[in-house]
Length: 115
Length: 108
Image 1 (tube, rainbow over the protein chains, first blue to last red):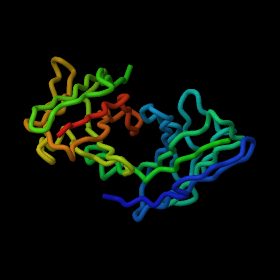
Image 2 (tube, rainbow over the protein chains, first blue to last red; image 1 turned 135 degrees about the vertical axis):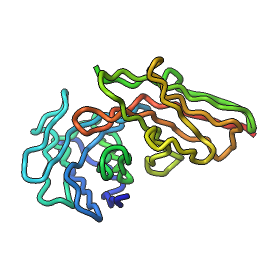
Image 3 (cartoon, chains in turn red, blue; image 1 turned 90 degrees about the vertical axis):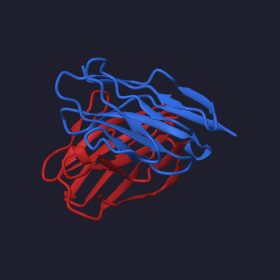
Image 4 (cartoon, rainbow over the protein chains, first blue to last red; image 1 turned 120 degrees about the vertical axis):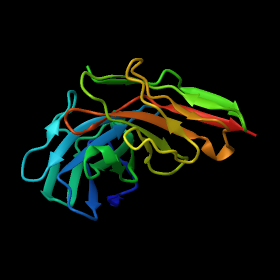
């Protein structure tokens, strides 16, 4: 299965600032997914990032708040913009295995605290 | 609607006792179901996928389409099984839809 390097692993940020999270995959993948895990909650999909096209956002998430880049088949970034304390969460990237039946691999997550 | 329900937030058992973590799903097509586990301070990792019908760390899960369930079972729980367990459904958009998770606590 793919190996994902995600960074930073954690950060404490001031409200109103932005943070960019990076995910590097050791193989080429078509689809990358960005999830959010709020404290004590499950994982919620933010958006799907395909190389060469704009990301597809889920209901409740917008590009202005969570811009995503996908410059190639091994890399993606998620930016959390104009942060507020409500954005304090763990953010994870994920890629699908060879066919979804093989499951999905997750990055180690970025624990974001906004103060 | 595509949905995964894990009715128990917390499940506490003693070491050696059987454990069953419940998962029910809602999906109109043929579902692809997974169990993920997250140990303390570790990343989310795949535990089981229904298509493979394998047993990992003594855990098994059977897809019951009639009951739309995919419960995770282990006959004898170990302390190292203590973790968060998430049931997930492969969505029609290629993503995963997660249940809210069940925290399993195995007491000595």
